Structures are given as C-alpha cells and as structure tokens.
Length: 123
Image (cartoon, rainbow, N blue to C red):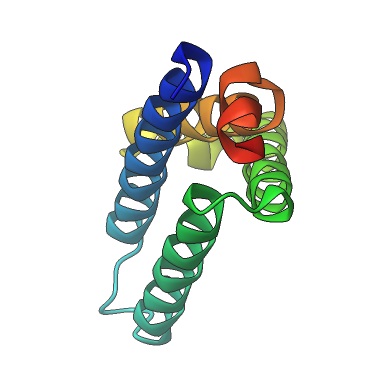
C-alpha cells in the first residue's frame, strides 16, 4: 500500500471517529424526557452514518461525497443558527454547539477535498 493510500486510510478512521463524536454530542444535546421520539431518530441517524462509513471504508466514492455534503450542510446550518438564533446559541450548550460545528466542518473538508482519502478509495 502506498503512503498516500495509507494516510487516506488513517484519515478515514479519524473522520469516522469525529463522526461518531458528533453524533454522540448531538444525542446528549436533546432532553429525551421532553422529546422521547428523538431517541429513535438519533438511533436511526447513528445507524445510517455507520453504514455510510462502512461504504466509505470499502471504497465507494458516492458514500464519501454524500456524507461530505451532509456534514457541510450541517456546518452551514450551524452558522445560520448562530446568526439567527443567538439567544439559543449562547445558552448552556455553547461549547457543544461550537465543537459540533468544528467537527462537521472538519469531516466535510476531509471527505470532500482530501487527496489521501480519494487515493484510498480509488485503490
């Protein structure tokens, strides 16, 4: 395996780890006592991302693009949330929101623009 492909494999593992952290933080953000149906949605979201990450690791380019675009849209949604909902954003979950935005930007950037990940998928 070439060095670039090996770096791509490591980046995919890091992106997978960041994606799982993102989903776990999003799950803890919601009070499940008030919204019990959100627990089912978070479980389905978690399973969906795990399946897409498995497809990415197995070399499917469409999964890389799809997940990269989803996380980029999440990042844009976070910026829109900061602009229009500042009273909600600067509440008790500020650190979680900022960390989620950073995670979503990093995931989208690596999935969409990393040459190492593209080389790993093309192998």
